[in-house]
Image (cartoon, rainbow, N blue to C red; front, side, top):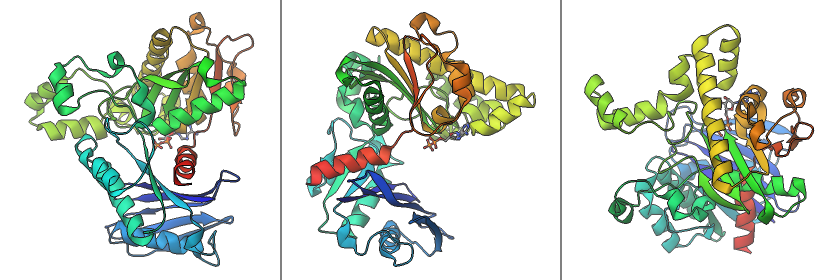
Length: 397
Ligand code: ADP
């Protein structure tokens, strides 16, 4: 069985063709600058990488080009579009309407559209991607896999904010959480690696990338997560502020003359590591700058590690213990300095890493637990596409 996984953004469309026997990507790539000048498709298959520069006025043209690349005699991976058994779409927001992945029908698509106001930047792009695929492959089953779904098991006292109850009832204001497929994937991988049933494990998963979130996974179920109503909440990130006192919004408006939308954009795009350091949102640049003595780069990294550490402690408390700590995504998988800073001083929880092992870069699951450490500390490469492909295969059979 072959599954095409689509992750559509407002001007981009990433894809992977996954063979479910091997669970490996046979082809992958992405279209960029859709609807803009200079659009192109980067496609990889059979050990070859090609750059296809073609005009892509909309997502439907982009999907058509992706399918052409997939069946191309030279750099393709399949001989005909018919070999694609189903398409799995990443959809950012399920609202409270879905707590798991779902086969896409016209009614489902309507419900997804009704949650657009909860993710105004992402949801329209996801819907455009679904419609583009449906137009070109009308008979192929399609499945929606939501970023929020894994977090739907949070108890009410964890997902509610301290605002009047009618704000939740009338406007769906609550914590939703994001990166769900990644937290699910790495927590399951951790259980497999430890040779235990997920039902007996308390795991804290740290997805640390451009956007970062931390989750508490108790018995295989998410019981809390650091992102909130939107992906702006939680730890400070590449360009996002993370949690701030909400009164800062009006204060900034008064002081700077920015309107509310401008302040929110300031918190989303100009803040976090980039805003604090004045150097970059990229952790590689920040580490290099810190090594050269840049104190604001040092400050940004310290703030990130400190905020992450506080979530680890908080979630150990929320679950009444912790058996395993997982690091994943661009920073979690690659940045030994951040892993060391996050775990430093957590010996009282039984968390200790082998500092030499932590400096080594390995592919696959990497156990960095110190000798005698009670809590397993694992570096696990995430694979959100595989989660989407597995759900798509299961629901489209
Ligand atoms: P996204 O949220 O866009 O999927 P990723 O998970 O790919 O992000 O993470 C991207 C971030 O990972 C980069 O901004 C960079 O800061 C960090 N990163 C990637 N490789 C390294 C590395 N070798 N060392 C430190 N940080 C890294």
